[in-house]
Length: 231
Length: 255
View 1 (cartoon, rainbow over the protein chains, first blue to last red):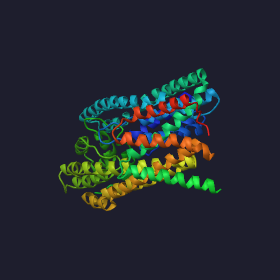
View 2: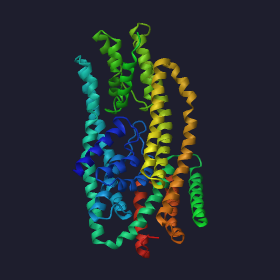
View 3: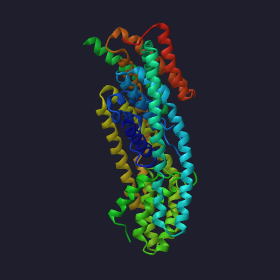
View 4: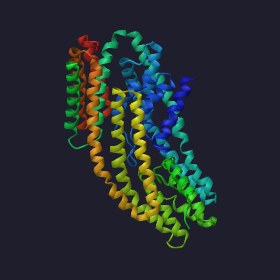
């Protein structure tokens, strides 16, 4: 049941991402908690949402350029982390999160290849629509537009649960085999989160971004630590 | 002849599916024809003229999906005149061809590379500092801005036709985008600080070590990425390197 829901969530996200609406619901920050919710652990999904959002902040569809499929990657990573946490009985921890990330993130690259495949299929769909219009069936011709949503849905609905399962299996097996890795993997996760913040800042391509990034981080740290010392 | 509000609302709903069948040859052509079809049905009683109109909208079209609302509204504006015999059939096409490129550039620059990343960064920081409620608020705010602008552009395109360009210029979206990008970077910096604090927990002495890992990854990562380092290998390298260093030094990462 969990995998079925995961497939539906991934499929709908793939559709929302490009074909319909584009209301930020397929962005990692919204999709990761929804993925967790589908598997019964929304908080676990939320735990990986922020770094994934920042990592893929620059994944945008500009013109004909294809970005990585951040929605597919998100479902695989968040789903993998939640499933691994459930199997280990620990919930999502930094260790399960980083292992799910390492195993699940390549699905975002695979998703980009799938997007190219979909574009080719849609070319045939558009040609068929033109032919249908020439046969004087205008309503049927333009309604073929909606058929373009089917393939992204199906691809994501099949690939994402498989990716999440593989990510969870790898994480569980590794942590069973080497429980001592839990601590070091925690450090790996925090290091990755730091890089994700940098990736987000860099993707925005603002003027003086490096200075703004460093100053804002230092200012927040200084304020919070000062408040902790004072209290 | 003018299109009823109900029909225009139907077209607006269908414009949400603009990219459903995006393809490399005609790009959003099928989506545009699908979106404008209810308006053409209302305007042309003669099936031959309706088909002719639909055929011209099946030609190449590509724009930012939100900004395309202005072009869709404007195309209906021109189709009304074509149906009334006041303009030639090429007028809507000429309108689309003139505006699609510039509006795509404005939309990409404002919505995709500024507004959405800004709200994404805001939601990321909110998720760490507050929880899921912050994510819901950020997504709602984004969509309030997004749908309001989309509806305004559609309405202005329909009412003003070519003059919609003036309204878009007055919105000063490129200038606003610059500010949003800078604010988004500041939010990423604040998120890095929040991550460092969360990594260390509440114990001040231990925070230094954990915060150092985050700060080193964020600082070195920023420098590497801004010099063209590829994102995926960088993410893997940092995660694996962090793990290896911690394993080698016997540090379990806990405060």
